[in-house]
View 1 (tube, helix red, strand yellow):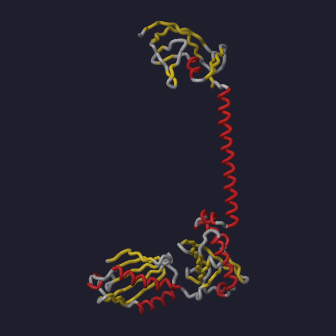
View 2: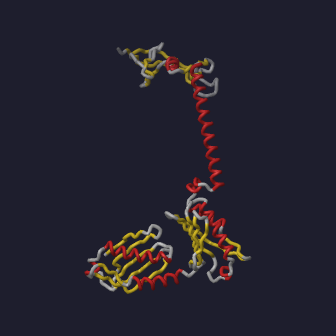
Amino acid sequence: MKKKLIITLIICLILSTVVGVSATYTKKINAWFYNIKVNYNGKNVAFNSAPFIYNGYVYVPINDLAREMGYSYTWHNNSKTMDIYPSTSSTDITALQAELDRKNMEITNLKFQLSQQNLYKSISNDSGSSSSSSNTSLEDIRRILEEDFDSHKNDGNTLRFKDFKVSKYSNEVLVKMYGDFDKSYSKWEDRDDDDFDDFIEDLCEEVIKYIKKDVIVKVYDDDDDQIKKYTYDYNDERLYEDDDDDDIDDKLNSVENDLEDDYEDYTIGSKTLEFSKFSLKQKSNDDIECKIYAKFDKDSDDWKDRDKEDFREFVEKVCDDITDEVDEDVDVLVYDEDNDKIAEYEYDENDNDLEKVYEY
């Protein structure tokens, strides 16, 4: 049942945070008393004085509500201030202390784990273990080589290297190092071979600290001509040097002649496709570009009716012969007699795999 009562409330308003600066006054208000119930965590709160509504707000005794919520309070009459603070029983203190002990134990545990990890990393870095290799990127290795192998003192002369490139394949790591000298430079031609081999061997051993694979090292002059090649066998722990230092262009010219002799035609069944020329060059990314020029038209029956899988095997053999001499991937382009492109393939030298890019 609702009742409207005229009551007088004495409201103490604190007009400033400075103690003593305050004013007290009385005011008549219209308040609504209902059978107001307040639940806290599903439990009804018992009030010593009935709650009421004034100006759209519900007013309840704060001391009763604080007690129900587990808080204690203190009223300071002089300053007209009420302090509200958590009630802490001995049971609560014990529970809090147990929680604090548990947290401290977790922190101690984490600190120990962190110290163990730091120790493990330190040991790994010192020993060049496999964990170090998994956390070291190719760019990290490149920077190490650039810092530690940017120059080589040989027989009183210094050979300097301006750039390094590091690539990882399934069975090996390829390191390309670019000198700031020409291959005809006297300091290069007059170098002590054994001393330079030791320099390359040290470089390979540095790489193997991080990647446990064979290492191939290619040395280029300032014109990007390959002037030396080495292979370090990871299992044998031995450095091997290529037999010759021929310029890459000389090698490609030699391979061109061999291809034109060995692959001047392709025959399967009664059909024969003839080729007039093979052209090889090294691209800026070091891949070998192989252009094959045919003696037939792209719309000829012999081309249209060819066995595509068998022709790809023919191209793959061409790539095999090229990579026997030059250790790079191969891009193959086939042209008809009108110089129209009729096929394109990419050959992965490490995987010995030919992939079709385009076929007419």
